[in-house]
Length: 232
Image (cartoon, rainbow, N blue to C red; front, side, top):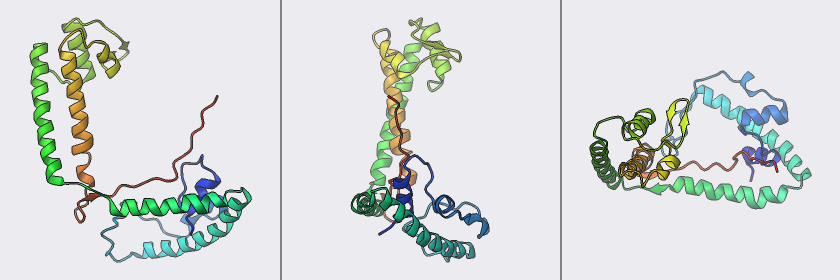
């Protein structure tokens, strides 16, 4: 029926923090940190591992949070109604939060073995691309280093310089796209980068987020993203 973060977002979507401490200070003039002792930042809550006994810090924090939520409910709902956004809160934002909660809890199934095998395939293709690039350039170098790649392309292979910065030759994708017809190594470098991106983002990047209990990735959906405005 009520969420402090969503209420704070509706009242002012330009802020970047909507935690209870921030909202309590803003709307209740209450500094939460004064009433509870500090403790080291804890890890993100694991929805499937909640058996640990609560510490005294957690208990104190829970009591104070319950008090703040009650007071924030009274203050923010009145302000939301005054702004004419009560229907938005009740019929759109709160129902959406329940949908997102279910999506997070259900997660997205990932076949870990299949992902590992896919990673092996990509790494094999990456190694093939590396050897092709070395052969076409006549030397070995760090392909991931823009400085070394720039030297090989524009000094050793004498390809036409498209853009130069203080740090050296630019080797971004726009530059390389313009050089596709100049030398066969360009296509290999672009393919290499795409494979590296696939491996880092969708194999090695996803692997740590697979929950061992459910074999699913339980994403965190942010409903209160800071609004941005463009000047006309």
